[in-house]
Length: 510
Picture 1 (tube, helix red, strand yellow):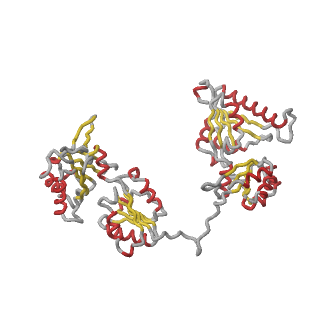
Picture 2: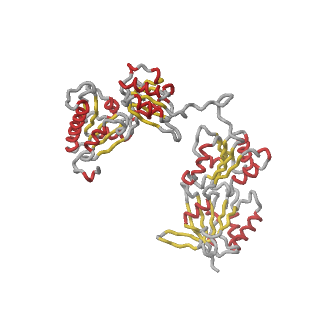
Picture 3: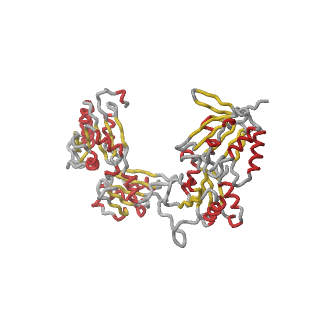
């Protein structure tokens, strides 16, 4: 029932699951609601002690109204004309009216329950009687079956196995038939039903695989093989568990344990993208998570979260071949190795360096994969619009691995072809003159008004993007953390809503 359907002064009823008994297994939401409630209600036996209240006690304020709902009868003793069921129905009706009087007065009521409110819980009897009259909120809790499985250290069910939950109050024949037809089972409500339950497990041929768990997660917890339990010692808060048949420990390989060797080793070259984790693809993140060793340029490795299970192997940016060989040697020894690059590993990065060294015969058994990444050119372009929206050329101004004469020839050819350009590595600490030289080459083929986008640290804390004209480009504006995009003759600069956009139309003039 929604709050809109209620009197605005009415209180709300919260059915709060407390978990199996350990106060630390109470959810954050349950603890918050318990502490905020006007009224805290809980069921108890005739002796007055409430397990639910004892679990919730650390979260009580101390000044709240308490409503103990004390069961009046047991199944053996009642003078009620309707027998046990008549007595218990009358009790639930009376409890519902007690809670309703608080709710009508505008008080929020939390009704505590062990485990989960809708898993064989007492709360559901109040819910059925009050949910049509008041706003009700049910807060799930860890149930006893999950707690027992955790304490036993065995999964309840795996893959397509079927888990069956049964009440111990069923007759032995019915229980045996249900147990025989399932992969895994939990039987609750033991106590006086225990002998019949154990008999059912024996009839179903699974007694030797079953366990007994009592008061799971508490300091009175008890876990034993079901076949060894004395029926006289079994309380109501216990259960019989037939865990997953697939849940046994995986046998160790012959010759002992240890980490299995990876077939022939594996090396994955990944692109981290141009900036933080949000720029890294899920595929790359998955490869990073499963790696034993991470190899790369130091600042790039610093972007990968540290995991003590993994080893990082940082190196200088000018030793690509040595870095590739180190990674391949690690993979050849049976390790899972990831080589990291910024941006995309196939764009002026480690992809080609690794594959070149991997041609050596001694690395023939090493699997090498390259996973793509978001490039710096894409990142910078996105900040201003779509300057690379038509044909474009990607080149590097670094003359460390190729002579300047080759760079100049390619620049001129791209400019004559009227391609937009993405210019990587425009400058470094030891290379300051190339930007000016490149501008001069481009001006011989392009108009001085050609737009140039300069992107620095895009996606990072020092991001700066500017749009200038080629003729006004000052080399001092460009450093090693920059990437330049140079437009073609059709690239346009427009202002929309006070923001500058740059795009190259997809249609080329005839």
